[in-house]
Length: 321
Image (cartoon, rainbow, N blue to C red; front, side, top):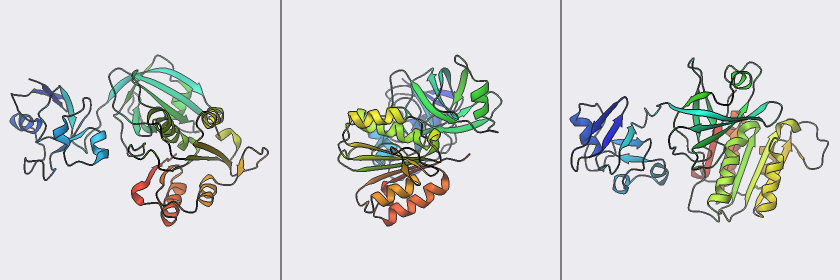
């Protein structure tokens, strides 16, 4: 006998009972159709434990990796916390364990969850402070046994949340956050594929996580090219760490770009997306990641497609101020 948590309620399953039947028996209003795993109307997501393999038959690889399952086929082997695909925001609690300046206006924020997490580097979570103010930030680290998450917080002059992080949030304080969401992460199965990653500002955060995941976790063999752009050198944080990665992994290449004045030959003059797309005019078979200013992301997505990249191989994360 296992327990199913749905919303604020918890139910016990009966012998050989599916998640769907458990919820229906307890008068929960959940969508379903054929009850045979064909129509997929009863699609749900496990927010903690991995669902049984047979309950994921017919789902896309990306859905399987994010613990989606068909409730009509799922006879739970362990206790599960489940949610409907469009109603997944349930708040978890974490402790702030580090707050470090990465540059004059970017802070590294590290939190430690009080319970196990399922996430991919590059996805995003919502952070919430006590008065209900919520902001979304991308995950900059790979999955770890310590249940830690890292974020690059850009401090905006009048940022309601970011200024609070800079001025009031301290190590030891508690912070609420949501489960990880989004498709902008490393995809397994094509370790020889060439990767092009373009980011501006703190758009580097998800890309940094994806790169480390590709290199250290999945031993990616294809060429990986990162182009990070800013107006001035102060915006190119993590230069030293990225340069170290190029020395450790011969297939990783890092190009820091400045759209403003350039006084050092280690920087390339121009906008990161324009430089990257000029360097690689044929992107057939490549996987492309675009993170940063919405205008840059939109323009670059179109350009990458016109240069041969499949729309299915273009992953985007547009950052808004």
